[in-house]
Amino acid sequence: MPTTSEPIGVIAGGGQFPLLFAQAAGREGRRVVAVGHRGETDPALEGLTTAFRWVKLGQLGKIIKFFHEHRVREAAFLGTITKTRIFTEVWPDLKGLSLWNKIDVRHDDSILRAIASTLEEEGIRVVESTLYLRELLFPAGVLSKRRLSPEQESDIRFGWRIAREIGRLDIGQCVVVRDGTVLAVEAIEGTDAAIRRGGSLARQGAVVVKLRKPGQDFRFDLPAIGPGTIASMREARAAVLAVEAGQSLFFDRQEALSQANRAGLVVVGVTATEDGGPTLGP
Image (spheres, rainbow, N blue to C red):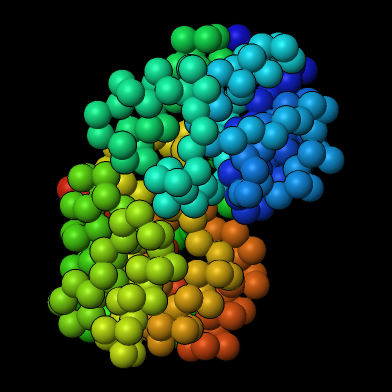
């Protein structure tokens, strides 16, 4: 088992998560060895590492070789990859191509689990993305100044059931509903696009529900929101953002809530009961 003095690998996508993780790992005494994906990863990550290399989507063999060179035995998946790029911008090496041809269902979780399994076969254990950042987990309860109406609570419960089902099918993590009607289901286009699409149909007052997929591996692709999500909500004239507490990431919390309050949005962290239903209180 690696000790905290040993390096930790980062497989970085876009956004601030890889940078936050690298900073937190450094505070814990870990040396960070990272690979960044061109067109996705913030170049600032390189300045937070002891070793860094750019890769293209699909270059799994290059990642493994780089980690072995730097004696990395633990690694984390962090940040976002634009999902539509898998159709146009994947440049697999032999290792990546071999793995790709073995994956029958190319949904998020299936791909990431297969990559993690290959890494672990190479002696590189994949750790939880929140290893040093538990404070980023979404809290329970209403976080905004505005409270929920009974109708909005009903829509959250309805949306929760739908989101659980699409998550079980590994389609997406988010649904947009209003008055007991599904307006949009997130697929490969991502949460913000789903919010805008659902909001255009609702015209105003839509309820957005975002959950972790049932059985989703906590090591990668957790639901995440931040100021950008709130901006999409405002553009769509949506009313409520309900996110699964303790199972989702909340970036730039103060800024996001400030924006939500100025727009009169409700932001609430929802927890699951023992039977899998939602609880709206803390």
